[in-house]
Length: 362
Ligand code: NAD
Image (cartoon, rainbow, N blue to C red; front, side):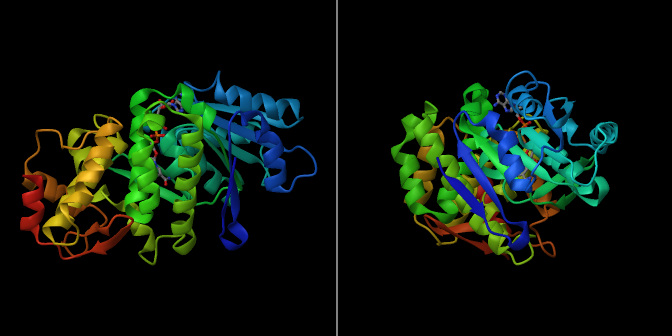
């Protein structure tokens, strides 16, 4: 199984990908953090994983002689809060932690973002290792160093860039992932094909059965290639300042609006992204940037892996557009979209005529 290297000068790190490698986390961490002796670690997880994947990781640290603290969050988005962060700071103080104490996040994007935020801020920053256990976290949120908690009025408003010392991905953890969360993660995988790699998109089309059956060979390739593609973007635009990283937001202008209007949790992020990708692709068609086949291929693949491709009934176009204008990808009241020019390539397009967006939403 491969290792993906994320090259960011002195913040570079490895993503180790394998099957049945959770118990190796402790040994990997010593290597990544350059420790001759076992150190101290806070293993953060949620209550769905505390007796399974997180126990394997924490027990590995205990048997290797680390000083181990365990912190269990409630599953779900509310744990990305300053209140939850405060309880993690308490656990670090009680350990007791020092500047070298490692935070290991075992879980999905919620655990990764919240524990990462704590690692970024405790004692002005302590080392972080990600052990992502959802497909979304393995192919997206654990790569790139974005960590955050939510403000009651805005998602991810309070955060930092804090690159991990390493990431360990055990694709075996995906076996226990609920179906809907698994399929939601596939939306981000398909997105990488559309925005960056036409060959990868072909591969996904040819391996629908393996994707639906969670075939380990297919998953190994899919997770590794997705991490490589995200790493390439992050390496060019670590802190989202040059615009390169914006390509990762393909489908997201529509998706964020649908997610917010449906009420967070109703539509999973990946489901909203699937709908948003199809709408963005239709918009690109209307602008004459791509042919109908490029959209049709996305619709067919998304449907084949059980993702929605049409928006839920309810909000009117006006409401959706107003919501999009609140999104961070609008500048000066103009709608901005990441749109394909062909399979495997997208561009950031501003000044899109609102009437065309209305057509797509109709
Ligand atoms: P999640 O973390 O809420 O996990 C989904 C559910 O799956 C939870 O109930 C969890 O307990 C359970 N679970 C996790 N792994 C499991 C496993 N192996 N077996 C069984 N159950 C398991 O959801 P998510 O989709 O992983 O993450 C969503 C979060 O990620 C959002 O808060 C989003 O903002 C964030 N995110 C961050 C970035 C980033 O760059 N930092 C990128 C994308 C998304």
